[in-house]
Length: 261
Image 1 (spheres, rainbow, N blue to C red):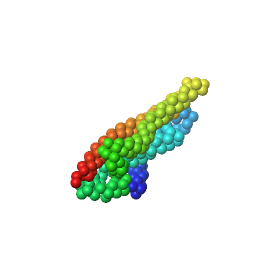
Image 2: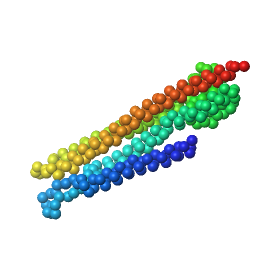
Image 3: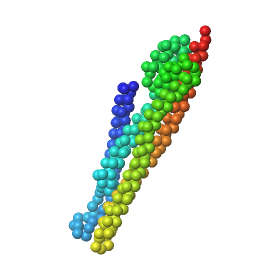
Image 4: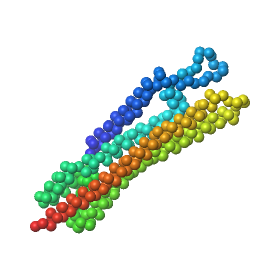
């Protein structure tokens, strides 16, 4: 399992590079030369023509270093958590078919000690639940099911705690976007309040751009985060149901086999 966890994190890191680096590089190449944004100049500027800036650089300048790094950090965390729990909540990782078949075969052959050692050494969701159930199987089906339910609750709780960070990212990105909106509008109002004459549009553009871009990027991050959170919650609910159903069925077969003479 340690090796599996290490591989999960390596895969998450590679996925981060692919998800963030490749689209950003492609977008920069696509817009740098063909989609310029014309920025107005002050009257005191020279006559060399209007400045041209790519949309990517305009976005960065509008967000500023602080919001850029905050949103980048939130995006990294979202992709890493999402990839981790997509891998962790796979059916094959929690309900391995080979474990189920081996356990059922051992129980059918009345090799109960071997069956217990099998699940005790297995660190998957199903293995841990079955091990808890077998530890109480001598006390009857009800005690065994209660022990399995308690173990299942502990495991699902640990998953839910991790998934809560995905929901936190969704709320945080929206809040950061709203903060940027307020910050940008304050910047524009400050220009109006301190101006001795009617401010020029380009003097207000900086604050308005900050307000709009932070709102947009906040929503771009939060919308996938909300969707990912709901998808992972559904996968967790399905996994908990499958583990509970399969473990009770296997423990029932074990008790049935043990009652035979």
